[in-house]
Length: 115
Image (cartoon, rainbow, N blue to C red):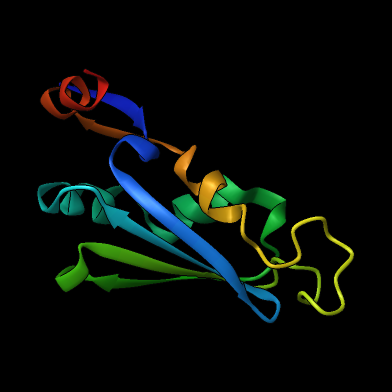
């Protein structure tokens, strides 16, 4: 069996700008949860999650030694911090938005993170 939980129960995240690209790092709170992140946070899933906010491609890099994934969300900042009129031109809120994603996990993990 499985259940869905918000990603924030399993991971921390941090984001920032690199020109017109947002860099989002997602770090498992526990090493044993890293494989769940690898399985659930696919490029397609992340792209769908952000929808029209990310006009370009999404890249994913695995960092198993850190129990982390790093995502590059291209064409997400309307040109970048120095030219963008976006409220969040440095992409700082993208990590919070990522952590709101719901992912499927085994029931025992869902019970553990919900306790």
